[in-house]
Length: 511
Image (cartoon, rainbow, N blue to C red; front, top):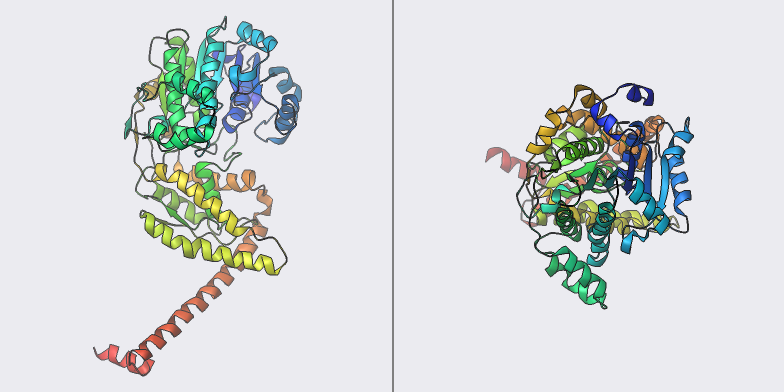
């Protein structure tokens, strides 16, 4: 939908954001970029963007590079002033005390911010407890302190995760009690001089949560709950966020996290065996459903401040399984190809951990050694075995979420969707029941190819020629391997007393 078309259609949700000042954290992240594009379309007065310096590049330079680089900013090439006029950088860091925001910027936020969207988080599952707490828990608590002093705040929106309460099989749209006081944990983190001792205790502290990410997101929700009496709040819990469905373009993403990594790994011939239950719900959700759903939920929460306003943004009303995902994706083999692939796509799954570990020796480790040996012969640095170490670590951190069943209640989100104005349903599509999974997954594969691997669609024919050549080599190699098995089998039969193949076949025929 073009900017002109969007702005020519007025609606309750669009009007809610028009002319407002939004303070956004995580603006340089995947969801943050989508929030920026959508909020500018909504005609906000200003977006206050929390950004830190990174690798010697200051926040303003980072923003300029971001706007020029990302195709998701559809109108930037033709109307750069539209973005420059709406975006104001607030230098800070969500992992630092007080978010490291200067006094002048802090005063500006307090006087002008109408809506706060907190989408910044440390999403690494293997992050240390200290760093996860500093970013996900303390960062949220310090942002809420700022929000509580804002003079014209309408709503504080916290983007959480559906897996914040993954210790329960059924997760309802409500607050859950924390097993650790988040403020006490923050104090302990800040006052513990020996971080090695703290990390040694981390596994015990986070139990029964599977990782520091899910654990600290659950504590962040408890921090938000404690501010309910002070400011209007909304919590949105998306499940595994993937590429966009259609809005503003299909198949866009900027990271290899989660499901994106699985599809890209399988499509490039790197990930060939995966431990997963095919009959379990995939729990993936398109990013644009999350963005639009969050904006709609925030509007609803503003008008209903006395409600609990926790919203699960998941696929439960229109789910697909991991097995169906594989079946939708497999027909794209030979239709979509990747030049940068290691080998042809060969994706196998098993529900048994030890079977997956055993097959990984043949599907991953042995080929990795062979590829690295070939690289050494060519005078290049071996790197495939190192790649597979990362692949196996990636599979390990995902295992909990791909091999457990979860039921997410969506009654409150459904109520919000059913109350939407008909124009809002067009401008802010966020109803999972409208998603056609076969269409989404085809666009997902193509999006990963174009946006993650950097291969324009025009190069697909060249990639297919490489793919067909590798298929021929692959089949020849299989023929040699199977022939070797036959020869070995004949030798075993001969050693067992069967004189030759004809005698063996004769015995078989008359048995």
